[in-house]
Image 1 (tube, helix red, strand yellow):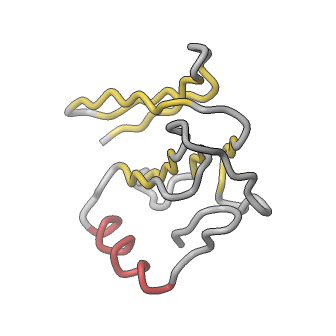
Image 2 (cartoon, rainbow, N blue to C red):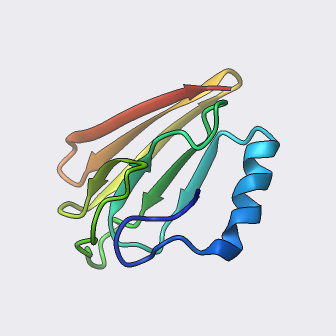
Length: 109
């Protein structure tokens, strides 16, 4: 199921959107709103991966409990998500404002 750790818990009304993305073999879901970085375990056997990237510089929010489906959750550093998209897959790097890579992931299409 969809959602974020902490203050912005899953909203049941978004589940049809997530189901449609899974059913149509989407690869990535990108969200902001929460002021932290979070990457989730694949939401489908095909590897649909959800990111929350709300670390652009205004403020950071310490989230509540981390969901079991979350692989990494950072609320202590500003940064950006660098995505490389290709016809056969994707790769990502979460890069802190000082240039340090804090997370890397990838998936096939």
